[in-house]
Structures are given as C-alpha cells and as structure tokens.
Amino acid sequence: MAKTLWVYIMASRTRRLYLGCTSSLPRRVLQHRTAYYRGHTAKYRIERLVWYEAHADARSAVRRERELKGWLRARKVALVESENAGWRDLAPDVGLPSLDLG
Image (tube, rainbow, N blue to C red; front, top):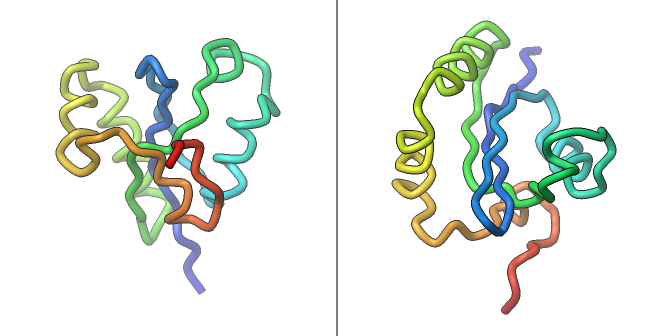
C-alpha cells in the first residue's frame, strides 16, 4: 500500500516561510507549533500551515519540494495566495485546531 507524502508551506504571522516534505502532515505541523526541532521555524515562530499538496510516491514529492525550494519567494507567495488568499491556517484540514481567531 502506497503512503501519501505531503509537500507543505508553513508561515509565521509576519509571513516568513518554511517549505518541507513529510509523510505525516498533522504530526509535522504539531512539531512546528511546539518547536520540537530548534532552528529556523522555532526562532521565527513559523506555526501556520498555509499550503499543502499530496503526492502518491516519495520521488514525486521530493521532486516537487526541490522545485518549489528553487523558486523565488515571490513565486512561493503567489502559490499560497492562489489557493489561500487570506493566508488562513489550514491545520483544521488535517485534523488540528486553527491558530486563527474567530
């Protein structure tokens, strides 16, 4: 049985971005939110899931992650805004509470 992999973009309230790939999107979002790993996302409080897409195999997910990481920031912002114009937290889509108020 094939496992779904996720390419995702997290953002801080000030829209600092982090792009990654994972086999468990809910777990990874929680890791970002709890600063499980010290580093860029913990330092800048990058806690909001703002974009994601599913891939049926690891090869296509890693290829897409590398492609997106090669993009300029403006193009990543445009990708997020094309599907999530309000930059709302998409965590409820994967079974987690939202950080958005109201």
